[in-house]
Image 1 (tube, rainbow, N blue to C red):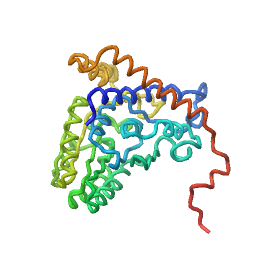
Image 2: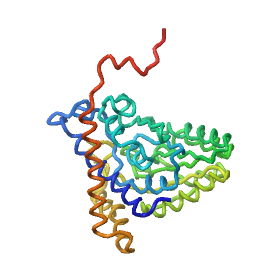
Image 3: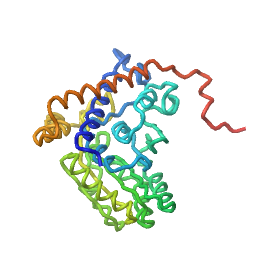
Image 4: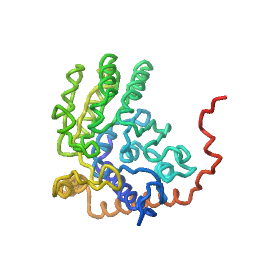
Length: 326
């Protein structure tokens, strides 16, 4: 298990990365906004505020375990150990990216650490169950973890995957990141129950619901669930209430939020709370914190510089890495 300070450092790295990507995404997109303009084309979904989920769960995930992520994937990719330079180059659409710049930020694939994500809501559940079934048959002790937002828990793939995982006792953990809104729709207006974790009972598996966006509570619950999976006891469903400090996508006007809602979230910033905890328990000093902030800033700027300096694909590259019939 990662030390608390290491977990804090990873959370800071994620936040620094997301804040910088929020800044860079706006480049070249004014005064007339064009989604294709600037160094980072396409949509951008950031996960600042959701760091505790990624770090708390990944503290118990091995490099050879499989992780599937949704369209908001950066925090999960960083916590899983995806190469920061190549991930950033992919987001910038450069040839040195994970998929040579062809996937963009919603389609990050790094086989070296068994990480993948998809822009299709709920698409990560079935592959995670398939990987878990393979791990079980191999007797490898490996597990799979599928992350998705609370809106994805209303997709058919979610229920089909839970059913098969329970039936096969597959070593898989389903993690629902409840950030209150599926795009602009509040959870109460889209989901018939308060906690998606209650749906686990329908499939005869444990369901756990956590509130507070607390990395230590998440880590404890993930440790128990992943240990169960490795011991052959089957899947667990974990739903974590968290917050997204940016909009659903960059450029989101967020007119659906209540007055003061986001300000309240920022008052309970999970990174600030964890830092204060570490300081109060003498696990971190102010000097340590300053060094961490400098270190993560250096890593992020290095990855951004690498991406900016990497070449863009040539037109003829459109014909590579694709299946052509005939």
